[in-house]
Image (cartoon, rainbow, N blue to C red; front, side, top):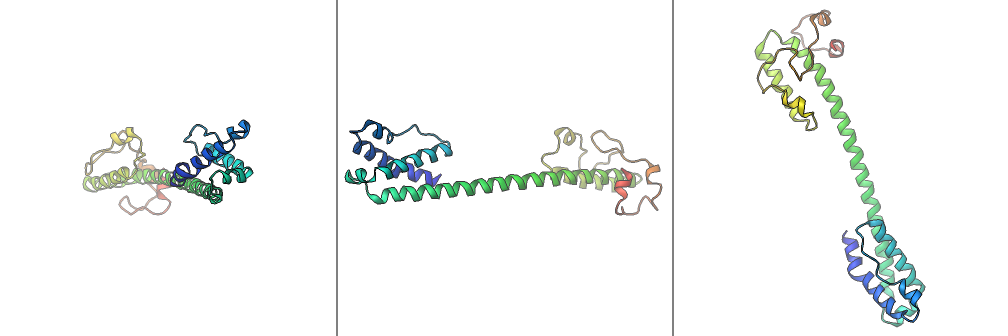
Length: 200
């Protein structure tokens, strides 16, 4: 935007005015120097500047005889090229930001699924110990706060940190039955790799 403002504030108006005056005897050529309506669209700006540059180059001698410095045309060409490069780089950065954000959202969604399985397992694992169940509930709530895109309905049904919640509470994953965990050695053993998937 700084590059564009610089071109629009000085070079473009100067070339347009001198060009329209220098070619006033030829209405068709003079009309090509007429100032078009301003547009916030970047593509429209590039088209306007490129067209003006082509016309100025074609009538360079006439414009310089009427007061336009030859360096102004070269400055316009360089400024337009710099603006195009900056615009292209901005588009690349914007696309990279979009792709990175999409990957992050997918990773968070997958993590929430894994935590849901772990929650279902721990609700059965700590069902006989209200203190441990309350601590786990508090930790699970911290994870929910870290996910701002969690559904509002699910957030509203979360118990307060430190509060115990029986298995099967609305808005939380349903705990697996004891039969599904019968193959484990002890309900109090730490979860092993693959057990949350089996519990699910």
